Structure formats: C-alpha cells, structure tokens
Image (tube, rainbow over all chains, first blue to last red; front, side, top):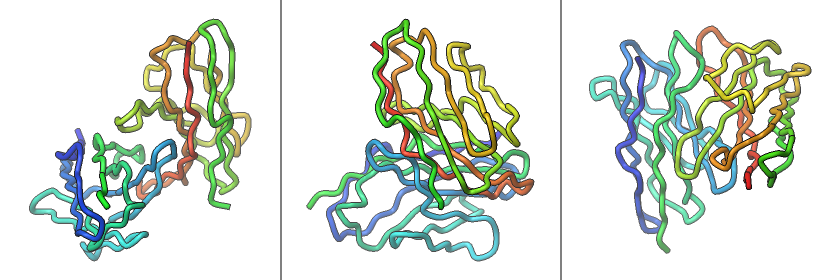
Length: 113
Length: 115
C-alpha cells in the first residue's frame, strides 16, 4: 500500500525567512509526487510535480522540491516566504497502479509579518 | 480555459431538503472527481467518473448521488443529509493517463452547511 506522511501539522515562519515543508512517502517503486496548495475556502492548486529525471523540481510562486529516493522524501522549499504564502500545503502521490492521488494530512503554514 | 467551475459557492440546507451541486470543465478532461473536505483535513475521495461512467465509489452513503450527464458536467445530488455531512465539497478533473502522472485541476468548492 502507498502512503504519504507530512510530519508537521503547523509551521510558523517570519516573512522573508526560508521555508521547508517535509513530505515522506511509502511506495515500492518510483512514485509520482505532487505538492498542492490550498488557500482558505479555495480548491487545491498544483505547485509542482515530480515524475522522473532531474530530482530538483521547480514550481510556481518560487517553490521548489527535491526528490530523495534514499530518504523517501519530497520536501518543499522556498528561499523567502511572502505573507501570501500562508495556506495549507498537501503532498500527494500517485503510482503506476493508480492515477488516484493519495494525500498527506497537510501542513498549515503561518507567516508572521 | 483551465478552470473547474463549481456552483453554488455556499449552500445551507435542512435535513429534509434536496439540493444539487454542479461542476463544469471545458478542458476536455475525461476523469472527474468529487471530494469531501473537512476543515484542516486532506480531501477525501467520494466518487470518480471516467469517460462519463462511474468508476470509483468510496462506499459513500446513498444520500449522495453523483451524475455525469456529459463529458463537461458533473453533479452531486443531495438528499436527507446529516449535520456531519457539512463540509467543503470539491470537484476536480484530469486527463485519464495510464502513466498516472496527470495533475488534478480543482474547483473552488461548495461550502455546505446542513442544519
């Protein structure tokens, strides 16, 4: 069975500080990995995705993520956080066996001015 | 057009009411999804339609009835709901890909309150 773990329920950062949100996955082969962002009262928007190739993936809004097979991780990073980045962030996984994503429980990002 | 449009944005209904949620996309996607999301939780899959046929029903109670009239529209008919059904209902669409690497496009959701 496949699973996604986001160990941090909340992360608080100051505006302008760097950010890293953690995501670990469990799957026997190479998964397809996604990061989605959800602002309050809105749907989810894709930030970036990893399928194969370069393990450092660039996304929208200045986000990037790095796939590390040895650590079963796909952590999301941003060098300088803006107040508008405050939102819920979901890591998700699909696999060759199913196109239905498995979501992590989400990490709530709080940005202090 | 890369949008998934959901109506209404907000809905308040009593436990004896019948209402419907609507979802529309014009991206040519042949997979459409209904998700239920409680506050501060990830989306929970309810139904998946693939090529206008119901392919996945995640053991959802019969008071929720999905319908896919054509490749662009997805409805969720609601009847005799319970207060615990209050949640954000999200519609999503995607290409159907054998490689499972297609992203989901989400609508903004319908915030449902059952009184």
